[in-house]
Image (cartoon, rainbow, N blue to C red; front, top):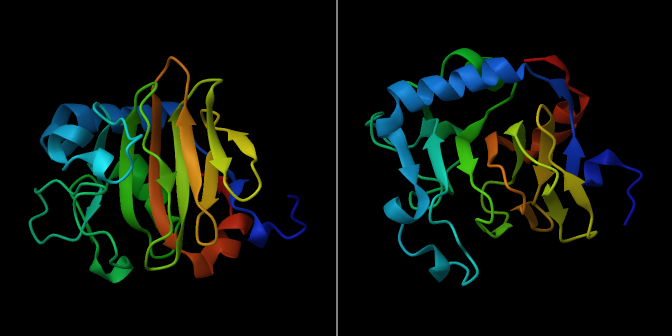
Length: 207
């Protein structure tokens, strides 16, 4: 399905760029100084196959860069913890600095921000819409030729290239991220209220 209006597009590459070295420097600091705030999906989650029998997330790792908790040293998990709260409920963790802070400061009302390390052949399933209405903005640090975003609306597959920034809109139709390659998919993602979608499309610059 072709769209004449970018507002209707569910997967879109944005006109933003970033320095991959800066992004990996940030990741290296998280691994060195904030590993206690990371989580591994199956170890720190209830059984993910209760959500979808095809789920295979044994070694998916991540950091919740923002949190709904008053204790900023308690790891915020992407699915285990409450995640229907809007921007006003989220607080910055000590991991909001440097590269990620520059990215976050470009967005309006960002919330539920994570950094994921997603190994090959791990299946997370559909990215669905949930309250409040929002889009995802993802920065791809590392990828491979068999890593893509898939739209359930159009059947379109969009390659997730390292160094690119994507907007993913699941408010009308689910989408899926697939990593069938040999290298990890590493990406940083923030949710932004859907009312700012056009402003995200119009953004240009370097993080």
